[in-house]
Image 1 (cartoon, rainbow, N blue to C red):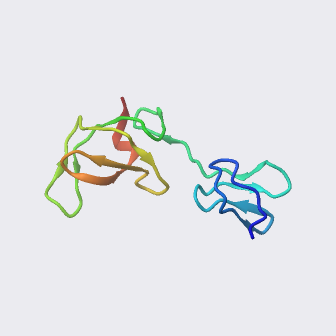
Image 2 (cartoon, rainbow, N blue to C red):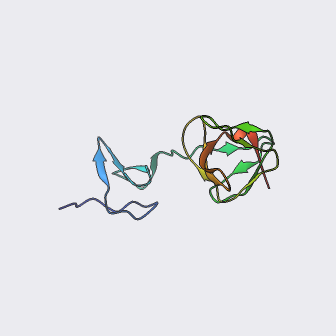
Image 3 (cartoon, helix red, strand yellow):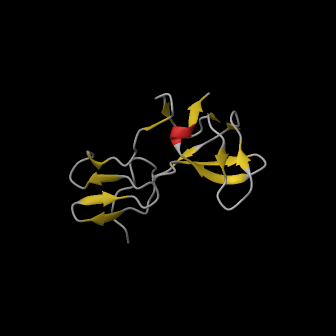
Length: 113
């Protein structure tokens, strides 16, 4: 039986102990088992081309024609992308573009609306 506390960030019951830290596998939140203090905060600040901070659920506009790898499609300048999700990695925006489908974008090629 799991006697560990629930995740303070997402309230998940599937926490596990990793050394001296407690870890949530669902949201990747880590905190100390002794206190409620955060050990590492994995949320990086993502900024658009103009320096505005992006958050999950924002609407952005593409500022440059972007070729879609493995296709002859192009994401045109001015394409609005709604309800973005921020992810780790080089292409740090996960989204769905009408007419093209799901894809990942770099934050340097979008601006917040």
